[in-house]
Image (tube, rainbow, N blue to C red; front, top):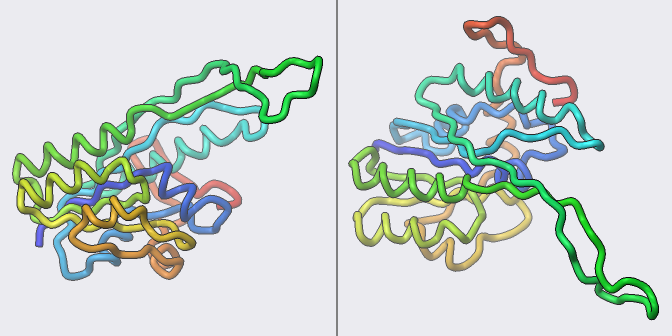
Length: 209
């Protein structure tokens, strides 16, 4: 069965990869391990370029190394959202008498990746790009697009839940043909080589990964 895989990059990272030794993940190999009987046509990875933060100034550099590594994989496309930074005013839960009731916080939120994934899922389905779509996320916002592909385009939609501790939201699971869990054993078997090469040189796995 011709299968496209749509990966919610930040959801996968924070649910399954953060603080693990499995961040150097080969997404195409992961897809092939999860669906060994199917033909993986394309893997679509949705993320946004990080900006340096005082507590983790090297994070954007590590991400760029990983994105270079992913670019060496056949049939893998990366789609970018963006980060929007600003200052927000929030009320205090229990303000003390005579003191300010609100505080200012620096805020950074990722925008666009969810819309990009849902749009790509629908457009590829309309264009007959796959017989089966796989969505790797635990974000309930994808339920509507998944249900449309399943019920209106009459195509299979599999949800891969990357969260080992929590089940999927009901509306998300109900929109899928079926749900598959992502386990540590899948991640362990799906690692990139420690060093790769592209047209600009050697790509080395970041220290600590």
